[in-house]
Amino acid sequence: MERLCQTAGVSKRSMYQLFATKDDLVAESLRVHGPAIVTGYFPASDAELSPRERIRYVFERLDEQSGTPGFYGCPFVNTAVETRDPDHPAAAVARAFKDQLTAYFATHAKTAGAGDPEGLAVQLTMVFDGAAVRAVMRGTTLDGAATRTADALLAAAGVQ
Image 1: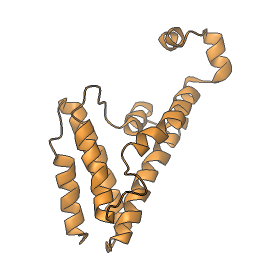
Image 2: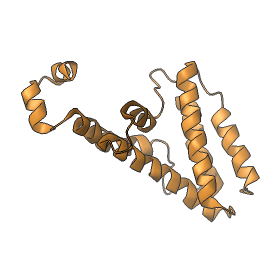
Image 3: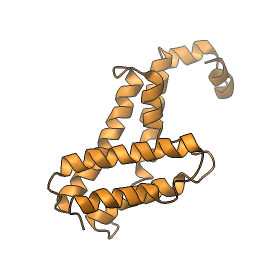
């Protein structure tokens, strides 16, 4: 908290007037920055892409980002791991953003005719999260592994 206050150029007292606890500060940070993070993985709504291509787009962005300096994985997963408490205010915000990703996958899987779009969406979210963790743990690019894994799941679900 000391370093954060120093970087922000405010006193601890001022910081605690804005945020009652460190937990509230972390949750608000995710609320503010989360939409831009999520949006960066989704294609534009008017992009002429099939439902399958819209799902693949997310994994292609993950593959690309995994090779950039400063890639630290998914901030929502990182927050949940750090807090280790599903009731933590920041974990609840993180979960809501992950639910958006799963809902995005389910919507497009359903449109593409998947037999179990909700189940496929959960699997795709797991691949996304696991791929991001792998990139961070190995400190290297995914080299297309996230997209290839998503392709395999989509093919197995009959999504063309």
